[in-house]
Length: 358
Ligand code: IPM
Ligand code: MG
Image 1 (cartoon, rainbow, N blue to C red):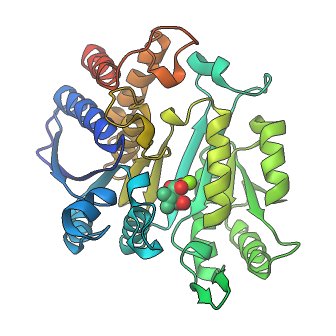
Image 2: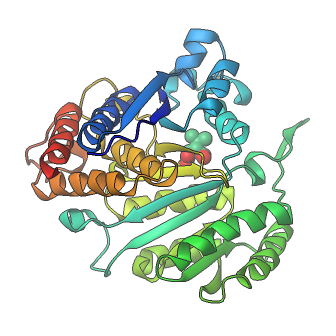
Image 3: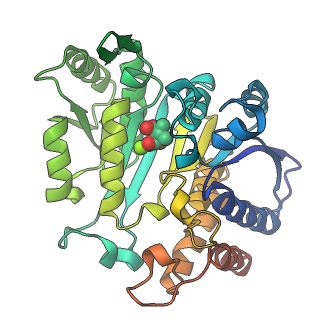
């Protein structure tokens, strides 16, 4: 109950689709954590994505970026939706998210994919042992941000990586692996792509600083296959922006519900943006049925990585798992035909667990 006196300034970007519903529950749970541990969280709500297009005519208003920059952490729901699908690339909601990542310098995207015991039956694979994978995805380079354009009847997107860019995400991956099971699988396509050959060389160099961590290289096509064959063999997956986008969805699905998975996008100084791995799910938006766990666990990652509030982050995670152990389920993870709670009820159940823990 020690009040540190510090106020943690959180830039809250609900975004589109189910974003507002799930971030509301994340705020509810953060406030329960604050109440139990004597922490004060202060929120500034900011528009980005489709919501910002509607309100201000652009996916990332300058003020959103500026205010996010001045915060202690950024919590985002999701961006995107059919309504804005016809817009040109740089005017789409996704451009707002990419602009935040680049504008805030968030080069390291961490996406844990863990099979929770209470939900083991949700894994679509045959029994495979403990699944606890951390995808460390490079987030501000590669084909996402390379030169792109149209040229007559053709179009192009350039995959370009510098040694420095590879080095820094590799450092993050090795550092994290050292605190986990000590194994990094670097994913590339070095049998075909020059950028992947530079990636591999640089990762080998970076590995020299981490003699305790075992490094293996795997082609991306093989990695997608091995993930299905035996996901428990992986510890940290180190990937480029594009490969990480694809493999993190695959790893997420292996755990049974993308509705449970959080992510952190970090800068070297610990500043970060936190968001669920899932998207805006416009088909279920506004129905109070979305699973808020990924948003809530994302808030937990913010407590841990940006605020250094380890006990608080542990309590939040324990509360989520305890609610799941009790059998409380939103529709996405409910047993077929079994009972399901609403988004709000799930958030309340988790918030109550936190209050009860103290
Ligand atoms: C993700 C998403 C984004 C990405 C989109 C929404 C731009 O798929 O965070 O994985 O491709 O990075
Ligand atoms: Mg993706």
